[in-house]
Length: 107
Length: 208
Image (tube, rainbow over the protein chains, first blue to last red):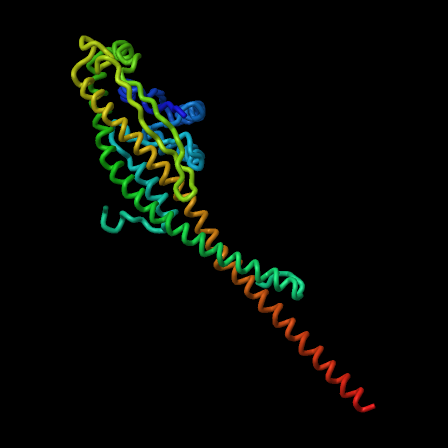
């Protein structure tokens, strides 16, 4: 099964990924991001989304967690990470293990 | 809580069989969840490392590129990137970890002639650097996607598994045990009362 990749983010910086074959979708607002996401969820296998938007449409993203595809991954935007990805990881960890493996010693 | 069944020998047999299955199921499920948790913590560690290293790289790349953008006109940029130099194709498969279907991705990168999709007249060297690093990042990003999905799906599955184990351990098995105890006591009681009745009848016959 062949899959395509896409990236959702603000138009400024994501264009660079077009050079490596990732289809960029520029959005202005969280609402835009949401509608674009539901539009492309069927045709793309991996969807990267910059975490400033990801944090805002968290609910929408959670809907796709249970199925294997599409894979939705948050990546930091050009202004750096806002900790969304990390927070998701912590949530998954707490759900599964009941504890946060990394909180105690910071690693 | 006692189950609502008739205290008969047949029911007792049935319940005993159910208890046996439940205990066996509990043991198996518990082992499965334990193994899933072990795999999960490996995956989480790997994921965390990869994410930490990627996050700085990605935002650095994006930053560099937006710098390059400001130095060129908008139409130039759009033109320059209309044809990708590297086409990334992802082979999407599914592999199972402890019966959980998680995605398995393999990246096929085919580079076209020439590394950059644009002529150097259009853009500054910042763009080259950014495109370069994006090219090297994409592999890691795909890996991250795979890991992240695996982590999320395993977490879901572990939660489900735990709930099942707990339901068996704290509800199903105690209920069955209690009911079995109740039925066997009831049967013994019936036994005793019928024996007493027989003895009484026998003694009455003897008196005659």
